[in-house]
Image (cartoon, rainbow, N blue to C red; front, side, top):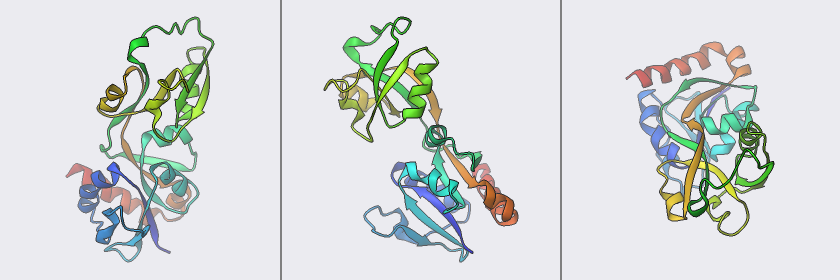
Length: 215
């Protein structure tokens, strides 16, 4: 039975390339070509295939055992909190943060000590709700998968909760960060049952990534 390594599409896929190489994993070349319609790719190891999926889906593939190993942002792990997923290594790539942002002209005007309810646009409903609940505020979540920065200006929400790397997209849309919820980086994740039932194989790949990070 082959081992499946789930990788996220987008920026992390590119960042992970050198790390995979140092770990001795070389998928077929078009795995990094996002115009390729293929989603599953053989590697130089007959017993390992790579799949390329949406970043939010990596943890789901691993949690349900469709993939045994994956590379996943800690934002996804915090949002879904799958007990079936074990994250042994911080890979140090894809570093950014999850932040609260609001229109620049209104920044600092929300009195969170008096507000009891607020509307927030986010693709992180669980994290957003927990963050505001800790302040005693009930967050009404407007679920969006993209274009979050448009929400306040169009009256869809008062605030947004989203990934921020440089802040340039926020600035271009008249928003500013007002709170950082969590720092984010990509993690190596494994399925806990796979680790128990195939400890030698899975453990060897964890060690390969550990050595790749050390090098």
